[in-house]
Length: 319
Image (cartoon, rainbow, N blue to C red; front, side, top):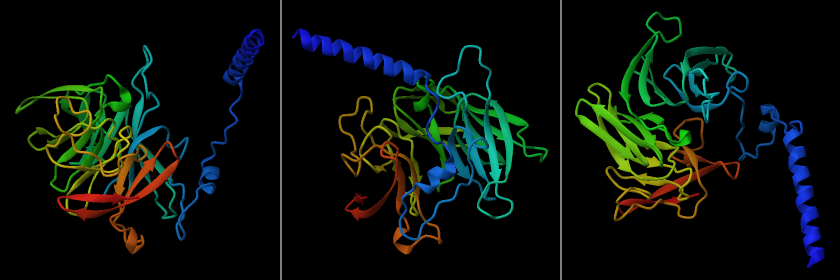
């Protein structure tokens, strides 16, 4: 027993020394994005190119393309936590490939002075942005490529946990603006149609013209992914739920929904946790890839493809 205790004491001492050494060790990880690109394992016939990277693009939270082919990015050097006395310094960037070589060669700071912008969606002559507790609309009225007007559309979104704040802005085929909220967030908003409240996860639906705001579904844990297929049906991924693709039924309840007696399950129970969602429809992709669901298994360092088949009133999802 004494020998075992002595061995344990020596082991703990050595571990402490290793931890201290690691704390003061120089960075040895190769973070060159070009070397990372070369390490990717791709399907036959596919290739990956680096469109933008550090320092041009630093800590992006959401990206999307506009109708002119420009890439918009909500970037936050502040994330995940603002320090005491730290000024608002986060940005919205617009990146362009002006010579058609597949690499962004022009970057414009469309807006700065933001605080952890967790989502954006170009539209209505500018861009909608989640800026901490507010949904704002930023626009450029003089054509210099930089926002000069700011209008607060809604205010009162919760900020208790920064990686659960309102995020994933996306336009629906119905012309409405959708955005997700994750668990541990409590939002209380005043609208022209009365107060709206959501405690926990769900998806909001906004009609920007008259500020009519509704909750289109409740639940999920960290739904960092939401998209619509060619028929306007809604799907979501969950970065903490582990059920793969979720078929989002309007007004339905999902895991973690407060007070729900029954919840809708995801289509891939036991699947790894996924972040982000895209549904493919580009003509440059193979026919058998059309309408495939693409998402990220961020813990497994993989990009995954799912296919869906109708199954009665629902779907079967296969990876």
